[in-house]
Amino acid sequence: MLKNTQMCFIGGGTMGTAMIAGLTKQELISPDFITVSDPYPGQLEKLATHYGVHTTASNLEAVQGKDIIILSIKPQTLGEVGAELRGHIQPGALVLSILAGATIGKISQKLHHFSVVRVMPNTPALVGKAMSVWTATDEVNEAQRHQAQTILAALGEELYVDNEDYMDMATALSGTGPAYVFMFMEAMIDAGVHMGFSRRVSEQLVLQTIEGSVAFARDSQRHPAELRNMVTSPGGTTAEALYQLEKGGFRTVLSKAIWAAYQKSRFLGGLNNNG
Image (cartoon, rainbow, N blue to C red):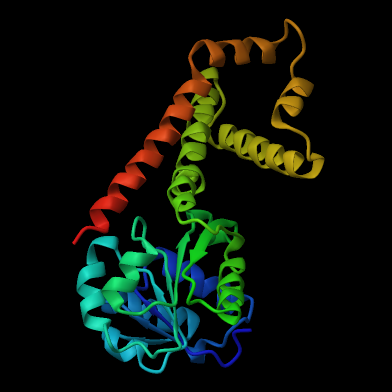
């Protein structure tokens, strides 16, 4: 699907690098067909050395003759980059954007190009375990949709949504979700240290517990409440711990946090898409 496809990345930061790593590791595209533009010479040197891709400091040079353009820049630079690239993207090209908060309408307007896919990935993409949610304009044809799926599958799992409103929801749930998990992990590890474990041992216990729990939940296909009940004996240690979590408002606080992230994403989207 991507063989002999000319591709470029506008921005070679963390997520762009993760995508390049996934695509080249799985040999979905040859590095010879990838060009990366970035304002930082050191980053370009790293990408060229590690992955064998072509690099340039010029965005205009990067997009010339490309079939797929991946926007992995900071959202606040969209106006500047869009003005620079407008009229220089070939008509049949696919633009795939991982800019947080920038709607496909805004991207299309800034670039004056209408075959656009918008993606909300997350940082586990760095280890090939991403959850990427995406949507597309009507101008994106079936072949381009398959190309987008192939690219995102190289990062982990992907899910297409037919309504862009879901993108703000995905931002709050899976996009920023790793931060919630990391904070939960951190709290558990600190509790282990407080009880007397070394930090190394506490980290081992917590990381394996979380990894095993996720694997169990996937394999069993049971509701999380049922799995929780399997661990909870009446009057036991788990029941006491869960009682304290409920008493402290664990569910409510987490739900409110995710809702706040959703509202913030909608607000930032409004800011990014004005003007």
